Length: 289
Image 1 (cartoon, rainbow, N blue to C red):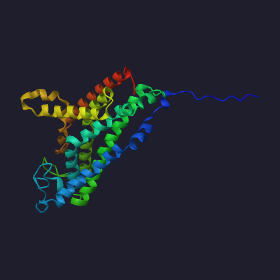
Image 2: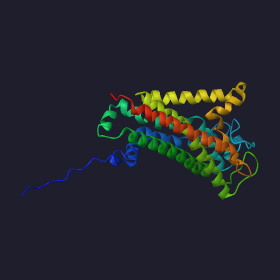
Image 3: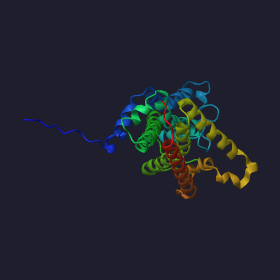
Image 4: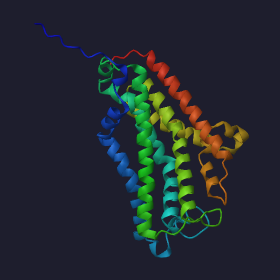
């Protein structure tokens, strides 16, 4: 009597799932370093405020000096401290992290010579790109949430849990403080789609991860420089970075959504276009590594 065994059939939907890719990336040292940086930033700032030469004066260089601005109110409580850390982080740190997670996604596989083996598994090219993009954005979001949570906890221990005081005047109760900080956090995550999209495209165009990350960061810096040139006038409104600080509108007596809606829409559209171009380019790319 002959025994027949059923051979497993190939199913593209079961190759390189988001869960598998997420686990792979969470095990990498650079991911753990990024998470650690989100905790280290508020620790370093608190140490500088508490132990610095101007600590007896309520913070040096304007930090926590009580002035009615974002930095001057940083030591008013955990909510203000977390908001200030978001302000510090969104300027450069989170840009680098978003560029790292997306720029390192495809280029790292090519530099390790594992990309061709993934495609020979076979993992469909677009499925690989989708998994890489989703996981990269997830890790960026996790890092952002770690920064916010660590900043609030460290701020609570160092400065108390007073209500969020707005640099535009007034203060909010607990529910409003949570709402305003959540809106700011969500908006900053959407703004990070721009460096993420640039880095994702660069990750396809080069096999050098550091080159993809560096190119994305340089492009964002150039866009910020152009945005600072008043001579450009209204042309600056065409730059995606022009809406980077629109989250300040969430700190007024009522939340004004106009500029944030434009900035969020701009970021989503730019990321979608860059991701589409990256995918189409990867479809036609000759994989040799």
